[in-house]
Image 1 (tube, rainbow, N blue to C red):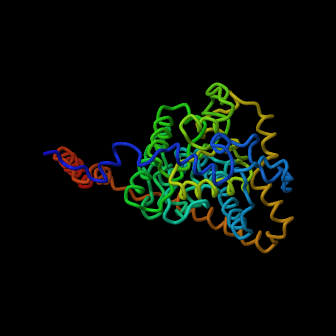
Image 2 (image 1 turned 90 degrees about the vertical axis):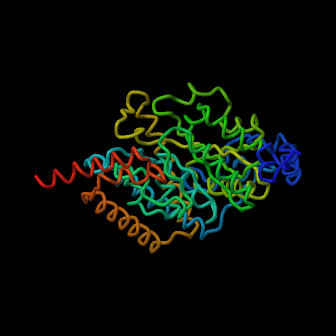
Image 3 (image 1 turned 180 degrees about the horizontal axis):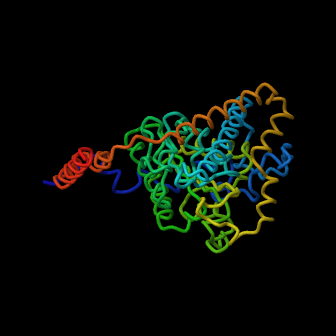
Amino acid sequence: MSAQSTPLQDSFDGPSSDPAAQIMEASRKFGISPEQYMLPAGEQIRLLAPSGELVPESEQGTSPGHEYPIPDDDILLCAYEALVIGRRINDQNYALVRQGRLAVYPSSHGQEACQVGAALALEDGDWMFPTYRDTVAVISRGVAPEDVMVSFRGDWHCGYDPHAHHVAPQSTPLTTQLLHAVGVAHAAKLRGEDTVVIAMCGDGATSEGDFHEALNFAAVFEVPVVFLIQNNGFAISVPLSSQSAAPTLAHKAIGYGLAGERVDGNDLVAVLAALRRAVHLAREHSMPLLVEAMTYRMQAHTNADDDSRYRDSDEVEQWKEKDPLLRMQRFLSAKGTLKAEDETRISQRAEEVAAALRTTMTTEPSMDPLEIFDHVYSEPTAQLRAQREQLADELARNEER
């Protein structure tokens, strides 16, 4: 007699419905064709000019099915505060590296709008899967800065509880976090949870096989993941032109059956609007989307990198004029949303965060060498227990000398 399969087993045999039908349904709601829904808008979505002025509607890049209303003032003010704090954290960590207090730090100076937008687009029960450069996103999600930075000092691989914040450990291996993100989203869907996952990566990650596997599985199994590509122009020293011949990285989405969009990653208002819409659509239709944010890495890949070997200083200077922080400050000030007392409060808060970070990072940690055995396996193996006992014995004999 053959055994009957369970609903859980059935879910692994293939998608629960036709992914193409989901695309058809979503496009019908907007009154456009599936191709118009899936392909990015003709121009990147931009709501604020570098000067901080609101871009005329005809120049925002929007079109039917690709429309992005400006978020409410309270959300924008909260986002600006996170942006200021994020910039201060980036600069403080860069200084700590030079002082020898951090082993390494991949700065996201200039990319903070992408990271703040990702954090604020999610609801409390949603998950974020960040890269090694997404420190600001992790902190904007509510993780204490000093808990994030211990990994860059070498104390722990991850200094915070991922389950408490719904933030996965920052991923140093390139692109592996996308597969983990898809797995969490798939598991949440099987359990009937209302969960959306943001999976963050850089332009270099799109050249990896894991990128293909993650997008393909997400599309076929219709899992609510928003893939956020922070296209900062370089995969360490390799420019995008040497990585892909696609018109944009957002165009890659349609090949997997996803909708793709491209947004000005230095325009926090546009990033917020695009990601909030993507998260909403992913939740509503239980399907993945891809957002490419065009930004720039203002500082070197890490403190071990000499960026002068592969890019011109004039290029960096040009991007300084597109600074997301200045753009947002000018916009909110002219709008009357950001007042002098707000500026003072936010600046003081940023300095408090930086001071707390300095205090933690300049205090010598109390290390227990035996901790290296504590989290290797849930049940330590006999070999691991023997190694731990051997090290404990050596430490004890050293103390007696």
